[in-house]
Image (cartoon, rainbow over the protein chains, first blue to last red):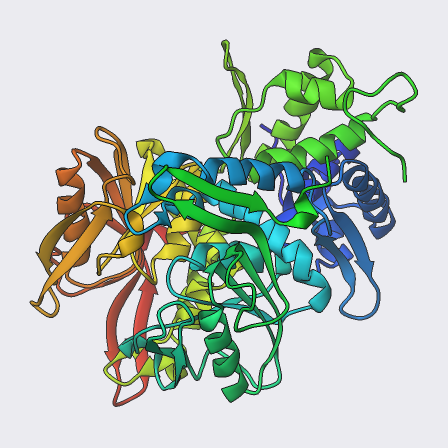
Length: 286
Length: 286
């Protein structure tokens, strides 16, 4: 194995284009939206900035050809290059249809008409794909952070935020002692009609930012509405609401303008049937 | 932009080596440990398997040179190629030392001597790095899944599992109705001496598997011990325990053989000082 040291002397062998491309194509997509300076790579490879630019152009072309995202040059003092996830990730529709089939397996039905879905919601690769798709639907809104309420929505929120290049903030249903001063609100879940409490650490959110709400499931929309109300207390604008599954009924949710990947019509416990379908946007694509 | 279709006809332009390398170096590290057949890429690129093998060898060489992981050929019927994360990710020690500095900022001290750390534990890039490092420390144990207990350990567990190529299972402190039949145990937290309950869905775990316990914080080790006990009920072996921060005292934890990235000596509320240090393994490296 050849030894390489950034900033090494003339004994360091020249890094070939193929190698530079392999490294760039590995590093940049690992940090969506993060700007890397040309100088960083120029020093790493001991190559001119013009050479690195050519490498980047080639990679961008390959990524676009295979629908793997894009590389964007950013001009100016803080400029450089960054990876932008694909606005419409490859095979999204096929993935969502597969997900729908998997979640519709009859043996997922639990007492009370719930669907067992933790194997999906806690599998890194399935939530990576879900997060990538949710991020692609909302990246145009340029949220500053993703918010969810504990607990099942957290992994999806994390992966969505990964592809948006932003942090996650988690509202709590109980007030945890380890988060410092909290802002709490009461809200009503549309499904149960019960009054619940939701809290957010004062340190977690800054006034004037833009938030994307992400959750795994929506029935009446009371929880999402609660998050909106909580964010208002912080003078934060909600720029969108994305969920993995929303129920068809009630058609009127307590929030408007939400986006769901899957629509749940009914869980027929008696006949062991889950009636779940992909959202319209995933139906007419190959 | 050139159009590419896998399985296209002779009008499809030839995919050049640079482009194949960019695509392979992007796709393989996005799926650690997952085997891709040579045929898959051979068809995607309309190139011979020998050509794809050459591409892979070049990428592997570049990844090794820059400490970015490895590509491994897997022989046999289910064979192909897969990405293995680096046993010692680049700049781990520097990252852990930075993390230590960040978490030691005096304004993180909360009433009761707690440290505010949600901004780290819910930031995709910081937990990605933490997960990569934890995975590298335990990949030799080949766990079948990662287990954590809700809620703060979940994001780190997810990212650790991403780099181990395995799923996550989350034990609950309350018994959620949406997970089906549960196995519950009582356990005692070493710090408070209180009896608590921890539950795991019967569907989540299969007998005979190997588990890695991951959590964000360990004081007495009672929670980790509880997870071990719970796993015994499922006839699952615990192959390791990894945490982000462990307290120096008590030195005798209720679990043996845990690994911690950071060691907390003391939070001095009165003088606004957090005494936190990287674990020994991260101290003597550059």
